[in-house]
Structure formats: C-alpha cells, structure tokens
Image 1 (cartoon, each protein chain N blue to C red):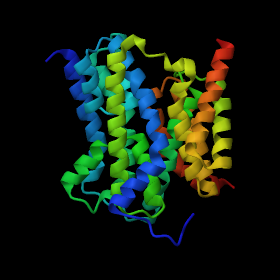
Image 2: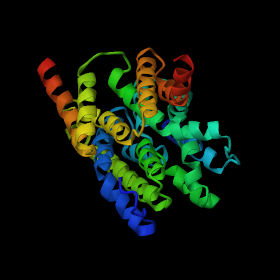
Image 3: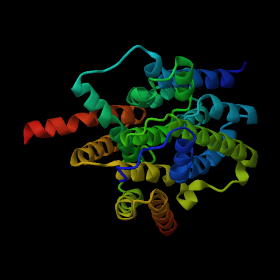
Length: 233
Length: 102
C-alpha cells in the first residue's frame, strides 16, 4: 500500500504492468507449449494450430476443443462447448467496462480481443487500486498474447519432442497462478467468503459433469454469498 | 475450407463475441447493488477458475495433491506477497507428489 503515491499513466503504467506482472507471463508459455504439442497430436496441422491460438486465444477452451476433436465429437458441439467455457468473458468484460468506457468503440474492440483470465485479473486489480490508465491492461495483455502465440508455435514445431508437462507439475502452474492472484487481491472478509464459495462451487460442478458451465455459474453466484450470510446470521 | 478450419473460425467468432459484446453494447449500471455486484465479480471469477483446477483437475472430484499444493500456495502468498514464489511452491508440491505416487 502506497496511498500517497499517484498511480502512473501512459508509458510508465505500461512498464509497471510488465514489471509487476511478468511472473504471470511465465504461465502462458508453460501452457502454450503443451497446447502446440497436443494440437498436433489431435490432428491439427501447423497453420491450424497457430491459427486457433490467434483466433480463439483462450487456453481452456482450446484444450477442450482439441480434446473433443481427438475424440471425434461433432464440430457444432465443440463450438457450443467453446462458447459455454468462454461465457465467463461476458462477466469479465462487464466488470472491466467502466475502466474502458472512456475509449472509442474501435479501441474497445481491440481491448476486448486481448481479454483473457490473466489480463482481466491484472487489469481489474489495477482498476481496484485506483489506476485509470488503460495502458497498464493493454501492455500486459499484448505481452500475454505474444507469449501464448509464440509458445503455441514453438510447441507445434517441437511436437512430441517436448516433455509432458504433467511430469513436472507444470499443468498446475495456471491454477496456482489463479490462487495466488486471489490471495493477493483479497482486501476484506467478504472477499474471503466470495472466493471460498466460488472456488468450492466451481470445483464441485466441474467434478460432477458440469465442467463447461462451472466457472461462469460459480463466478456469477458467489458475489451474492455475503448478502445471504448476513441475512441468516 | 475444410471442417477443421470452419471449427476454428467459428470458435474464434463466438469467443470474440463473449469478449466485446459487454464493451460495446449500450449498458451502464448505476444502482449501488449492481455496482457492488460488479465490484465483487473479479475475485469470484478468478477464485472459480482456481477451485475448478484444484478440486477437479481431470474433471472428476479428487482430494489429491492439488489440494495440499493449493493450501501451500495460499500460505506462501499470504506470507511472502510474492506471486511467482507462491506459484513455484504449488508446482513443486504437485511435481513431488506425482513422482512419489507414480
């Protein structure tokens, strides 16, 4: 907490985003590499693998898509699953809208293309601290975009030569990143209730066949928990 | 265009729409309850992403090494306030647990 210090804007805000956020940029590299490998194993060629990361640019949905593709699931069902998994972006965009709303529509169309879980977490955290400059979100989001797409390309080229990320626990890196961001962004007791409710509900739903809607449902309902608790106690 | 490319483009279009629709649609919540709800959304969504990965990493409920790792990530994050360090603790715990259990 440095309350007296004014938060920077423009280039200084962009540099601060990279300085503060670079550990989060490790994860897309660690996850993008195996995505490139697994996409090739699922039957995508090199341009398709790279094209999917450029066009969809959403890790969880891309892994789900290539897993279903490998299992022979019809394309329409795969697209529907991708839509359901990414419905959480609607919530994130709603939450970021006040931060972006001073920008014109073309700028918002570009800022939205770069929206990911990680960029959302960074940008929303910045706005919560009182940051006003969109440069912070933009710099981090572009860096993450570059890391994800470069890692996809590298994984697709390396193919089966790349090591299995599960062996080294690297598949857990993205989950650990989300946990750590929540821990660092909790400010008051109600945040703890909301986070615990969301985490448990999403885990239970994902584990009981509701994987595609787990995050969007848990994320949308958990903010109501403090109000319910207050009414009952 | 073969069916794989069609799938990739369609998946890209629906994903893009989830990202930009709330940013360009005419909509602006002013009620304090709505604003509070929107303010609470970030923590809820990120925690949901985390909980899904901890409790059901393979889309089945398990009380596995991920739960222990998650507890240690929380402890490391609270103690050090260092994101990278907390993440590395979690990855190391999962890696060691998997090498022990095969």
